[in-house]
Length: 180
Image (cartoon, rainbow, N blue to C red; front, side, top):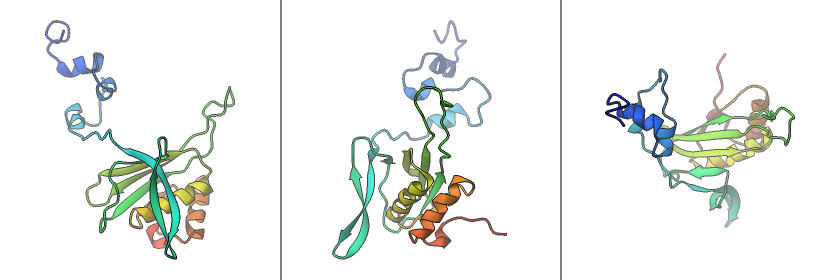
């Protein structure tokens, strides 16, 4: 097929006849990143799913990870002592993507956690929650990842999320903000 129908183009073969999920989403247009470079990116399929919870041990409150079958948090690498992390957060507006037709389907709040030194994604949080509740989840996520820097969306619903982070006592200097 590659030699006869696709003029020797093995990349086009992967696009047209995918054998895995990554090949199924190859683009035929002008890609921003080359397919060869994207193919070299590691794919972590064995992420652990779960939730974070604040628990008290010996008079101290700490954040613990509780594995569950369908948790909002997917962890690719657990936090390591003395590593610095950064969290990018997209706060959902609660917009119904079905536009009122059929069952309600509001958008998701999403957070990506990356190692600040390597840029490697180490965790992802995704769920349908209100902005203030998302602030609580970011608070736990940030604490668990060694008091990570947080870069939240800072307009509309993002303001409620930031207010909740501050109300909970997350250090203001760890929440990104623009300087005047």
